Length: 230
Image 1 (cartoon, rainbow, N blue to C red):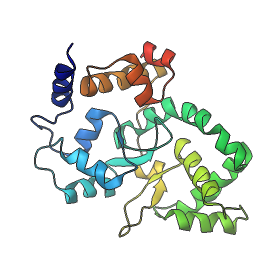
Image 2 (image 1 turned 60 degrees about the horizontal axis):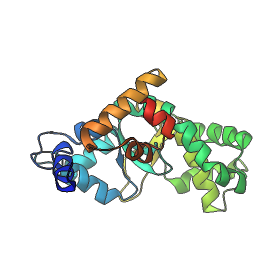
Image 3 (image 1 turned 90 degrees about the vertical axis):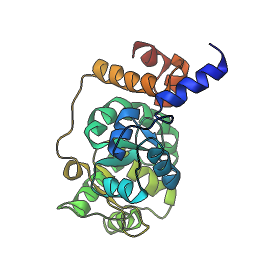
């Protein structure tokens, strides 16, 4: 297929030619996941794939928990539809943990410390509380867990995200907050692993294709073996 045809087909499949979806969560669900470390750019990208969607409407869906911003697929933030967060984390978290293993060792965030920090974070966020990362750091410090190194704190928070304990809360002004995932998304879909692989592949290829198995492996963070199986 000529490269120009590939580009045109991808524009159509991504919903950029004739945007038809109405809500931000519909866009995110259709795409499977949207990379979101560039928060403003990611919101803009979502809005381009919907019909007449405003920034305020996207922000409201994020604040309401219809869209979750968390670490999933690869060691970076993604927007994921709330209905998908459970099965997607279960599928990708082990792979992301393996990718992060060097940093866990370097910063001494081992399994025992991860368990301690999860307990502290759960207690701090219980009953609907939503706290910034700095406030989570204060809670860990009170529990005598050393977080003076910002990267160490980031690793503990990311491990708690990947383990399905915490996720994004509503923004407080311009500050990001965290909330308990089980309170933010009370009912999470559970899929068997093969069903999760199949579903992730379906969403990727229908919205990013034409694409190769290698493209999918890079985007998803899966091994090439899992990508082929998917």
